[in-house]
Length: 430
Image (cartoon, rainbow, N blue to C red; front, top):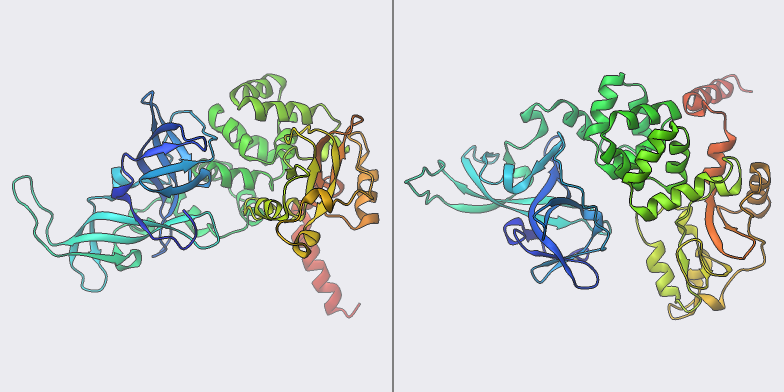
């Protein structure tokens, strides 16, 4: 559904078909998974419970839903077929929120929830519940119909849902920190007790936990991953940037590493194995295997659509790499790079093959960290391609990957002390 599209009442989603991009039906919607938030903030929709043709129920994240229209759900086609397991902070809309007794904040009257409406937030891929359809009066019994007035109110217009009212421990903590940047949430987790850290990590959704793990010290990463069920640990590793996941896997005992790799999607596991084959402090060990790759006959409009993806970091979105097919790394022949600024200067129909920057030599996978850092400093780059002897693009390195490996191992522990020291120097007039 495009941003700004009409809201959808969840009763209209029950049982509708779910299709992949090729038009093949993969299952039907059986429920929606949401996370309640502190205060009167609308709940965030995490995803859908989809029943496959085999009767297995799986979780489909909303980030993999590309459209909800004409009584059907369209997905990216990438589905994790592991059985759905509800987490402590998650609520099922059909199973737990509908038919609930709530109180209207304006009048204090009791009402029963008949339906809920969801809407996609503008310019984002997030969805939330924003409206509640209720019937006033006492709840009808088995032999008595409730003929009370029905009305639709804002989520904030009722009480009876919030995490404070339900007394959820880890859920309340998570809702409090919901708006934190992953690096800041990682700092909070690092200073929690091991028990509390495990509780919060278990309650985070896979994508959020993956983002947070990437910002944690190595010891915390290993501790948290070790306390997750193996199937979920594999899911979280798949959600991480490939280079970060490969670094984490490299620190595990060989048996644990192989077991997790066997549980991952074959393509993701192949990427991890390829990255782990390189020395850690080389270009191959630093790169991600998922840069934006386009064919030379792609247009500026195609390129801008790819870099507009909100899941991409600014560094990854700074440029696209033009290659002959195949477009998955390792690609066909690497032709050159097109920078974001150049894309903004040319008409949408311009072919990216006609605007390639091929002046700079790409990095070789065995280039040592000082060489990589010197390349970034010399040419003022925020990202750089890594190409093998055959001319195929293997991946790309971003400047944050370089900094992560050049800073001291305990830099996350000292960053706030650095700020304090800077303040003291300024106060002394030095």
